[in-house]
Image (cartoon, rainbow, N blue to C red):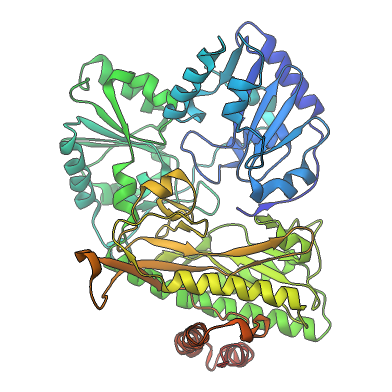
Length: 597
């Protein structure tokens, strides 16, 4: 989300070197797959793990490169079509996933390549269940998926490849986490008992951080650290570089958690299988995003792959976490009010502000807030046609000036000890065109419809309007969400889950519109309790005005207009006290932007 840059990198030599390695006996593959992910499937990999970006030159956060001995293909989705077109050089063919007749990279391997070939993968970078499915499809063409012990892209990258960070890990106080990690371990063991499991392996970084009430800064924007964990019936092992843990963290973990080197994880798993500490009738529970190398270490017969029990527990925020979301979003609203007021003032006075300078100023306003720990993603500060690139972010060396005659879309967020924010607002600081107002109004109506919807318990997300949000963790959190992805359709929304509400409309080459609030799933009372089931709705926690002068009021119903006025009354009541006496310009801007219509 928000990858920086649109400049093209010449990949000719990189691909030549990779293909030379692919031909060598120790690799001997005709195709090599380079996914975006690291072994923990982090959304934002560390620089050392951005192999797909290195080999292709495309640095969007989603995509997969497939390199053959002659050709190179980059698969990505609609969020990144424009960015990929700008960044890929002539060596690459862009595969626009989601368009008619464009296969996924998995389908491409099994249906569009020659038969009887060896296809190489790094087993730490492919989901185990995905590898099983891919192997099955390849068998029909007499092709083979080969797991390599060394990643050839790393060899090509060589000494220029950055080192992985090993930053300080710190404990998150219970006043923010709301629950001691010892209780979380008991809850995980309860889930294990249901499957008669001997252990649970935790491989995703946000799950490890949540489980032990620890946070770090090894991944940009996500307050996590490189680690694995094993929870057995009577022990817990944290695999992490011990140099990242100071005495306060060791005291926090106490005698309940054994610390071992990060690099020991796979060998530890092999010893569990070798010593028969895990077996078919007493397996290890693995989340469905666990990599293939973990399964190979334990043996397929000794594991159960299922939706992660840690993810399911983490997704439902406790009362302390929910209150933290409310508090941090109000403070975040202060920074947003100060920024948009400042930007409007700069433009009205004729000052020049480009997209990158705007993002930097917003970050500055956030940085002085209480409990601020960093940004939750690279800000999407985009003007006119750039706003139509859904996950665009400005290149400091090549970006556009913000002007009064074009739509400006700003999607940004912060990390705080008490929560994570993600908010998008779309502005026009001049006179918007009729088609811009109409589109903005329709997006607003979609936003209001989602904000006010009431639905029965057990409902899953089926519309592409939102994602889960972590509590001082990843801004994109699973398994909950409101979207067309299979995971969203299999995960019921439950009270305490946090998701974004962000409908949008994007006119390629012209402008983009999005309105985004974070909402909390809550129980609601209905007059008749139809069907005798519980009903749910949303509580919005984002506190930032929505531009009313971009709204075609004639299109709004009475209820929609009332929602808009009520929302602005709430925003002003909660945010204004923080501006009184400290920033009169922002306070006056907030008063004007929250005026009823």
